[in-house]
Image (cartoon, rainbow, N blue to C red; front, side, top):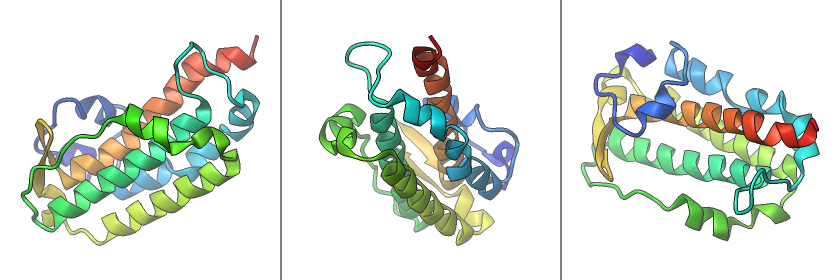
Length: 174
């Protein structure tokens, strides 16, 4: 299904969904997966542990955040796809970042893990039919469909790569 087939554009998540071009959800997940990140690999490597401002995340923290968030969003999609109507909580991304110890990890390890998680998400979404993609559940303060969660995962990656390009790359281009 296409992005335009999202029937209920959820507040907060709409900011991520808006980054994604009009594509089929599986195409979007594939196009903005590991190959999208690998185009940035040399610049990522140059960044090392730099931050653009005190207290901001390093590149490794951001990559770990993408991994953790995709796992959480895919879990939500699975719950809603199985018609679980339990209200799911939000999560504290800073708590996750503080306890992930991403700075001690190698860039290649993080990229490999992202790829594995994205491949798992793609396999999950391949198992969904159109009715399943339109099923909704409630997360924190928003109703959101399985389809919208798929596009949210894609847009979340696009958003963070944009932040890296805008705020981090000037550090290595001085």
